[in-house]
Image 1 (tube, rainbow, N blue to C red):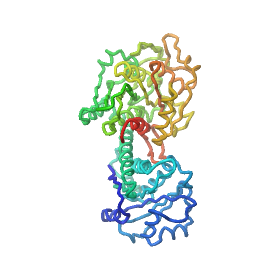
Image 2 (image 1 turned 60 degrees about the vertical axis):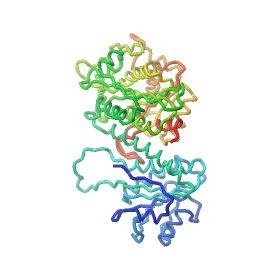
Image 3 (image 1 turned 180 degrees about the vertical axis):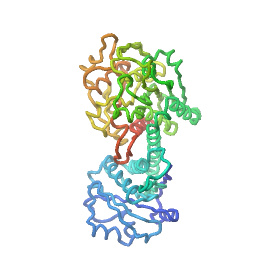
Length: 518
């Protein structure tokens, strides 16, 4: 369900009059600590409610500490206004954009789960703040309303007895001053674009693997191409074409599966501003990973429909490229297949030849993602001319041991480009941290019967990154995102529901926005 979102410089009373009869509206207000005098929008709401906010703050002792949230019942004395939600932001001088995100996440989840309002009115602070602007504020509010409203695309046919269906937002109205309205509208547009793409990626990952098959991902890509008015060119290679290209990694991983693989390429070239830069996105697309003959245990296999989170992120950022219209050429590839078991499955000790010509001995069939990525990285460089690379993959469990489940680990071979990606991640509100590619670990991928082994010993996330590095041309800036720990949750956290998070969509979008007017 899509939320109706608009930004206006109208007064609060006008916004409330637009709330449909019989519906509930919540006004979300932010306050800083150390500022006792009410000014701006919070003063307007207090006057409208005849001092209700001031009285409740005095009686409840509400302190606007960071992430302090309070719900005030309006008594329905004001037409359309059901509840007021106060969010404490702490000292104004210490507020950062990421702190704002954390606080707003609590505000929207409170509106959803406690206050139960279908219509949200959010007055923006009407002056630029230190560290971020009204445009960024509006973008953050818009993104987090959409992300918090997301509910997994479940297959339930009834409400469970004793459990009420969750409240969903129907509209979000951003209030600004006339002087900041254009900035608020720009932020609203960007936030809506990125958040809705993130939710579509969540939907893809949450789908059961019998639905989100390689051919289904291919059909979604084709649909994007058809809807792009020629701006996005999509090509899907089937089994015979993959075999003709000698993609030994993809063929080996898919050898035990009934569903055929699909190798998807998406190409965008700007109408103006063509440069010699060609940005390549590569997404891991294992639609179900049993581990192969090195089968996963119950806990390890249960959520392995999520092993195509990198593919979902790549496909959905390409879904908005025609609106972003970056002034740079972009190539995206996904090697979609399954890692299952039957008599034809790849076996330990097998040796395969990748598209690059490098050979790999299979020492562990559950280290399959790097095999498909090896061919995808070669293809995007050799066939599509990409000379700047980002790959996104649910690659290793060890990255969670290093960084937990809220920070994505990234690796790079070019300091300048790695810093650029980290800045984009920070601007997007997706925590990422660079892990070292110590040269001494490269040797751990050396094979005995082939050029490489897919089961090198040592720190798993670093070894896997070094394996991928073997398929990146010297001098080509490259960043690898290991999203294995951040792609899927077994619990709610902030604006992330249980299940898929859609991680990396907003970071990739922010990379493209560097070359865009949006």
